[in-house]
Image 1 (cartoon, rainbow, N blue to C red):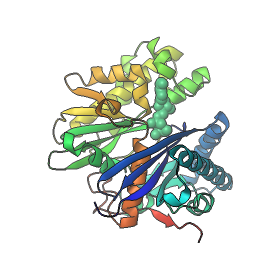
Image 2: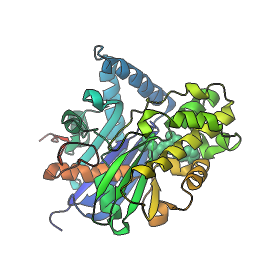
Image 3: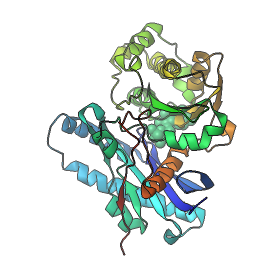
Length: 368
Ligand SMILES: Nc1ncnc2c1ncn2[C@@H]1O[C@H](COP(=O)(O)OP(=O)(O)O)[C@@H](O)[C@H]1O
Ligand SMILES: [Mg+2]
């Protein structure tokens, strides 16, 4: 392996639960070693600010002026990421100078690839100054400007993890759910399968004031309303061929509004599971197994629904196959940062729909 770099990846996903941080050693192709991890949770206040930022960004996407609050939010978000880097370095017994690069995803506030627009806030120069480490951020814009979906970007990292298990499907259940198919010949197909935890989180927040249906407790007490699930699955997104990507806010929960808190949670949980299982029809061949990553795998009702919807297929969790299920996306952005430095492609025609394999990411060098 030629010149392995020590990289940090930082991911703040659409669930807005906090920042996942992980150290990975890689040359941008193979994984040399896994390092420390850290999770920096957001408090309710930060989460509310991010939600408000998303609403502002939605009107900006529709052509309004860029709201000034977003600059303040970006600074605050970047400072939270600097704290995550500090804590990660401490837990790994590392100094800033030991780390070659940070892959900084930032927080997606809007994602409208059809308008060639995607907005991830997070300041590379500020994080470089605060951490004293070179930063790569803005991973999605080049892809979207070239006509790609700008998402998902983790597939090339899933391939690095899973190619020896091919043909295999790797599913990440974050706020939005995405899938990577790795074929026997290294073929890579990836797309968002639809909503992940976001509708369940939003519903739970609305009805209980808590941000997460912990343990699937609310859904477990409810009954699935099959006609609402069937209606939701008629959304044109699901019939669209891959590649495709989804804005977190694409689905309104209106259809469930007449349901009780419990039945709504059960129904939206079943909806997410079936949307994931429905992705099977877009795969080039049946996978030997489905490996589930991301926060959604901690929801036992969601996992039960997914097992039921994928009956006959082998469904395992990332942890079952020895991966760090909560840090795969963070590891992926460490990997992508190194690929960006090396000018290696991070997105592909069959993952984001970009016309040709493309690199991406913007480098902000640490202060001299
Ligand atoms: N114990 C749990 N019970 C139920 N749901 C959980 C649990 N832990 C995590 N989750 C779900 O996972 C989400 C976080 O997933 P994550 O992979 O971090 O998503 P993202 O990448 O969008 O931030 C939470 O918002 C919640 O919906
Ligand atoms: Mg998260």
